[in-house]
Image (cartoon, rainbow, N blue to C red; front, side, top):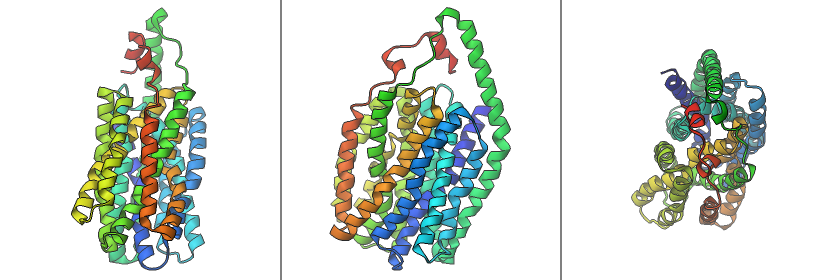
Length: 405
């Protein structure tokens, strides 16, 4: 029961962190419609949210493997809300850029430590456990646009200050649970030591990090991140600019997509535990291009909206599975693996978004969507180059498998 409680606490913390990222993508159409931003400037804010985060996040993961600091999760949640909370009070573009960058640093602080602790409380079902943690991010991305579409028409852009409230509450909750996380970690370490001693000569040698396999996975995650961030940014702009929906209705389409992403993340983790990580990653990813083609050439708002559901499954079905697979490839560097896979999955694609925005301004919105399609083809190809984890290639002794239970 303690593990379950901590597992879902980590999921809720992830929700409160990623609400702000989801909200940013939904606030941008209001800024574009009001003439504050063009597509290039909108892409610049996405860049601000993601560039520093993508650079800093692996560093915090590396440090987390050496010196665990669970309180960093609270700090990260608070900082992640700063950019969005202050955005409605600013008129200067570079001031917006600065506060959004600070929010990106908060995201970078939270995810490696969050991923490491989520792995800890996942037990032997790493796919399922990491899917519960990862789905928190999807739920946050889905709640964020709903909050933005509610607060801004109600209170104007200054309504963004309300995003600070859930972050502040959850930061306090996480601080109160740190002793429980520390006790759980100590108990797991003692159990692992006892099992190792009782196994005697049958115990396997310490696992080795598989850097070549992790490198192939990282390349796939980078390509996937372009798809994920491109879709999050351009879905509301697509409905507004191509299908001519009002900005509020266009932003709410992002919630349909984000809710579907949450369901896909949960499904993907459970299916990976049952059928294998690599197989599930490939099956989901291969379906992206056909569904994207239907979406892009749909003339009906209803059909385009319906296509958001299978698109979400092909993009986010493999998400938590990739994170858990990275942790399997680097069993001695869980924090670093989480920092890279969670960081790149959320952040690095955002670095490419300004380029997509520039192309949309110059050649039309569809040109940016075609680049997203090209990234989808690349991602599919790369999934077939990722090897299986070593324990699937060479079965481990029963005592070692029992250690995780």
